[in-house]
Length: 357
Image (tube, rainbow, N blue to C red):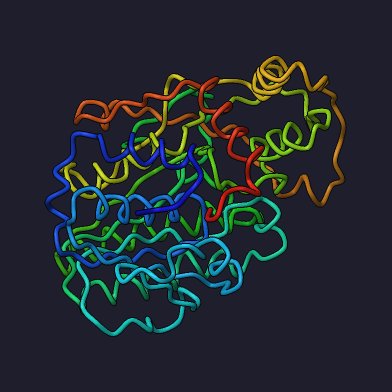
C-alpha cells in the first residue's frame, strides 16, 4: 500500500470514488511524461492507488527529466513492481521499449520565469516532444493519448469576454517571447488533431487553468504558488499588481477526476476542465488566505517587480474556462476554494513528514 501524506491519501480516495469505469484500465500500461510535476505525479499515484484497492494490475511508466528530483519524489514507490521511472528528455527517443496502452503527455515548463529564461526549451517540449510522443503512440498502437493544454491557447478577445468555451478563439502575439508557451500549446493541440485525423489515434486534449494543491511548486513566480509559499513561510503576502486580475482555480483532486473522465469516458477530443466555483481576483485570494490564517499575523502588501520578471506575466486578459461541456458529461468540481487552500497548506505544513510528492 502507498505510504504517503494523509492529505494526499484523502485526495486519492476522492479521485478513485469518482463514477468512472476503472476496469477499462485493467492490465494496462500507462506512460506519464512530466511525472515530476504536481498533476502528472498525482496521475501516477492515482493509478497505483487503484491497483492497491482494486487489484487491476496497472503498470505506471513515469518519465522524468531530473533524476535526483524523481528519486526524491517517488522514493517510497521505486521498489514497486507496478512502477517504473524513466529518466530522459521528452524530445528524445523513448527508452521504454515494450508496448503500452495509454500515454498521458504532461511534460512542459509552466512557470512564467521559465518562459523567459528558457523559451526555446518551452517550445521544444510542446512541439518536438509532442511529435515524439505522438509518433510513439501510433507505433505502439495505444488505446488513448491525452495531452495537458492550457487556457492560454484561447488568447485575447477584443470584446473582453469573461469566459470561453471549446469553440472560441482569440489572438496571440507570436512576436512576444512569452508566447513560446501558448503558441507551443496551440501547435501541440493541432498536432493531436492531425494525428487523430491521419492515423486514427484516440487523442484527448485537456485545457486547464490554475491548478493548486499538495506537491505544487511554491514561490515559483506564479501568483497562487507565491501566495501559498508566503503563508507556509509565515511571510506577508506580496502582490506584484493591484490584484484586480481574475483567477479560475481548480483543486488538484477535482482536476485529476476530470482528466480520467476525459481519458476514459468523454466522447469528444477537447474539453475545458476548470472549476467555476473558485473564481477570485488576485486580491480576493490574498485576503482569503490572510483571513484563513489570521493567527499567523499575515498582511497583504503590494509591490512592483522589475521589467524582466514582468515580461513573463500575461500582458493581456485571457478569459476563464467555461467547463459546461465537461459538466454535461458528468464532471463536477467538488472542493471549495477555502477547503482546497486549507488542504494545500496543511500538506506543506507537514511536508517534512511526507515521503513522496
